[in-house]
Amino acid sequence: MGGGARLPHAFSGLPVFLGNQSLIDRDSLRIRLLGKERALPEIYTVRELNEAIKSLVESVFPFVWVRGEVSNVSRPGSGHIYFSLKDADACLNAVWFKGRQRSWERFDPLTGEVYEDGPRPPLSATLENGQEVLAAGRLTIYEARGAFQLVVEVLQESGAGRLQQEFAALKRVLAAKGYFALERKRPIPANPARVAVVTAPRGAAIRDFLRLAEERGAGCEIRIFPSLVQGTDAPQSIVQAMEQATAGQWAEAVALIRGGGSLEDLRAFNDERVARAIFESPVPVISGVGHEVDISIADLTADVRAATPSHAAQLLWPERRALARRVEAAFLSLERAGERLLSCAENRLEFPLRALFWFSPEKVLRRADERVRDAGLRLSLAMEAWFFRMEARLAVQERAFSRVGAAASERADRTLALLEARLASLDPRRPLDLGYALVRLGDGSFARSVGDVQLGTDVDILVRDGVIAARVLRGVKEKNDE
Image (tube, rainbow, N blue to C red; front, side, top):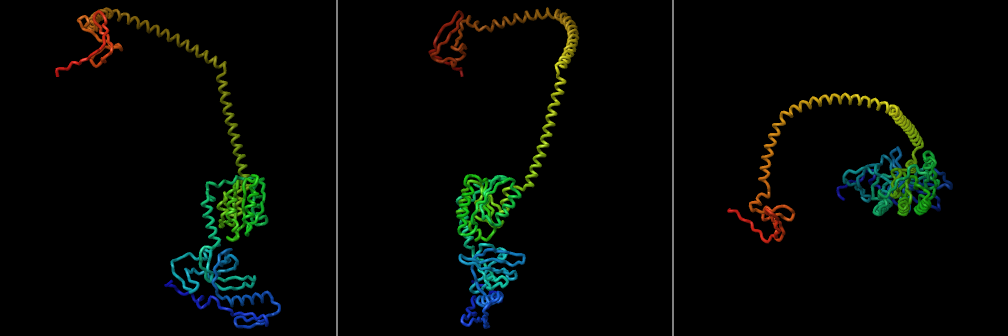
């Protein structure tokens, strides 16, 4: 831990605990404060009592270190930060004035040494509920309200708070079980008619929810199932209310709502029993717990997460003005569609009327009669012209035929004689007269090679004057001279 620097002069020389410098003598009813002795009156005014207690507290605890978990953080416009330090058994109010919000890096509360370990964002900007911090400052009494508080001079992170650690651990366990899986989340019905609300019946959350439901939900029915929303009994109360809300399948959706608060205030909604009730709900669940920055286990498990209770009502029901605009748009669309339908029907009706006029039987017969007369006239004229052309062509062809007929007959006689001689020379049976024979196979074809005949098959041998039946016993192919 070398290389450190001492704390600024404002903190040097101040002990952690100054000891018992203020004593009350009950027998003499006198008080000694910072070396001054003062008689105690029999009856105090409020101011006198607050001043006496303030002097006593500030003298005994001029500078102390406190470790605790941050909650109820508030940042008004003045720049001061108000919060509470708490542990399992007690709570202490604290204020961190704007002028004291230095950007310390890291320090040792025992030695006062400050260590330079790289730039960090100021804790005043990142302070949030659930952090565990080390706070150094003086204890005092705010006389106007009689509030006991710690005026913080130095603040340092001390690790995540207990509730924040429990939240993170439970989040990991439930995530592994599939509680937060997107594929299991169901959509909330659009504009539901029956909604069950699980919340405190007299809180601000239900008032805001009902106000928006009255403005938005057209004809919807809402049933409130009261439950505790804070304290040790709250988780079981929420589970019982959820079971009642989902019994009988009356509700179309369940709204689990609560106003904002610290991590401790929202602890009931970070309980595994509540998460299980939401996970096992037979109807969709919308969660509107805390403010927009608050995220609970119930929000992560619910089918839909709303930023606030009012936002949950906004997600459940659209604005009536929006519904009215949708109805008006639907009416105009229906009116235009009706006009288009009538126009199309008129057009379809007009076409058959014109067709009926043009295709009436009388007009059809009249036009057919005219076409028949015109066709008959054209046919008679065409026949006369055709016969005239045919007669002239026939006369010409008769004269030409008479001239070429004789020559053609002579050529045909010579050609016929030549073909008869050629046909006689090509007669397949003529070689049979010379002693040759033809081998006919079973399929009617003639053998032209030894390979065309299979051994053991029957063949017919055609000779000049008949047919010889034979069976192939041997086949020998003659070799060429080569």
